[in-house]
Length: 304
Image (cartoon, rainbow, N blue to C red; front, side, top):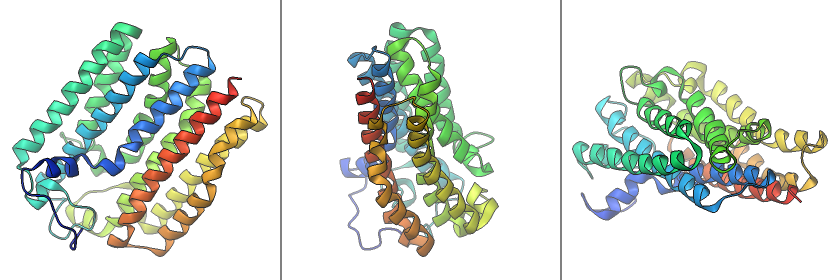
């Protein structure tokens, strides 16, 4: 049972809504915008207005996706009393499914407004990217073929919280998408995927019963551990490779300061299981945010 000893907010309260947004995960949306903005600065085209709109839009899309997951997983029977993860408001009875759906659509609608502004700044292709991101957020656990239920959640996270978010942030500021930005997006997407891996490794047993065929269910715990290790390796190999290839200055090695934390988290994942992995989920998200801050700072300094 998740958070058994924790005091839950009152049903329908502001605290319940805050819990529903999963604030510990929102750094996953912040990191790629920071990195994409640093990539724009590398090309001498950082623009604060579009960067801020991209940040707000990315956070709103993630909130909408979190709310969608909350209500859709409940309706599909994936979230039950046996759930091992942090409290889900729909399953816990803190918010009615109709209310969570309304909150989901509100978050996506506000994100769409950010997209309208960004399309005015950078062209209609940005609106298409925003619509695709919202549809992907809905399709993660909703719709006739939910991605997360068919082992495609990892691909979704890597693509949209890595490549699309970083590349899109650069594009709205520069009007172009550089190959370097896509390379810089790879570590962000890898660590965002690692957050999902912790969630799925924890839930292997309950997801299997619910028919949720995540990649961890398909590959087993050992496969999930290997994926986490691989995503971590990629995250730290990319900055080193770009510096060695003389694409970036030594400042780009700043994210390597987080390597001891990543090593500790990899060890913790191997030792833990079930609800004991909940703190690791939060710490992996924190690792991504810290990595993103340092990666962005290193890229910014590499501009000279």
